[in-house]
Length: 438
Image (tube, rainbow, N blue to C red):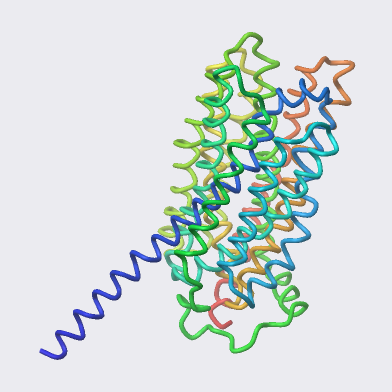
């Protein structure tokens, strides 16, 4: 009877533990969604901001890309260093409050300089979001379930983008609101979510899902960086997702501008609703499916983490090119949807590798370094590149054709992403074996 009682208590405890870790995953996914609401909103409102402040494509490109990414990337590493040593829940809550506040302040900007400074503030705040979140999730989920868990967390990307599109459409639909009202409206709720996180989520034990791998002392910063930089497949996945995201960030921040220019007279509010639906369904499905397939396929071979995103991009990249050539808005949206579905499949596998190949005490730093490379290349480069090239070609090609041409160059980075993911498959089995002994 005593053994049965102990077994029942253990079973109940395990059930509660599973429910709690699911709750934590949901809350962190919501935080990530707010991350992308505040990141995406400027791309959605771009045509309105351009007209109101009298900006050119190059100025918009700097706002969408490098101004946000510069401090976002550099501040992320010291914040991750703190997250590997101190309370990660507090760090996420403070960061969420900061980036949400600066998004709201963006709505008060009356000129280009003020808006640029507010975007820099949003970037600094968002730097403290993903590294500690990835570390917490990896403490709650074992590595055989980690890609799926991180793909669920990554659903914050399509859901956040969806909410940003819907919010913009509904707030602007009445005609009495402007882009500033949208900025304030999507920024302030994030502060309430920060309070929910702070008071309902507890800091988990380090290495909770990695029994026998818990380091007694934190690894020194330089040693940790050196350790990560010598893992070939870590680099391969990092560069793969970076080159792919170069295209995705550029497209997500310029696609509304492109459709407004290429299809004169379209109903922009209907377009915003459809873009929200596509991101919240098809893109989300790709993100989720990528994690699930990677976990199942990797049970046979870890090469799955490279093969899966490479195969998906081989389908998605050509679809994007044809989307730019399509003369029908409907056809273009369908082809664009194919790209979103396939590029979403690389998130779970890439983030899982960043965590699985890193020692427990370096997990937050691993994600921060991952994001440093990713966002310096992708978030800083993609939108800025398209804006500068488009602006330089506008005088000779016109604004529509200049933007189409600049976006067509993104095919190069999608090709580089495929090469990087396939290169990873050559090294990952050896690196996977080494990671077991950390």
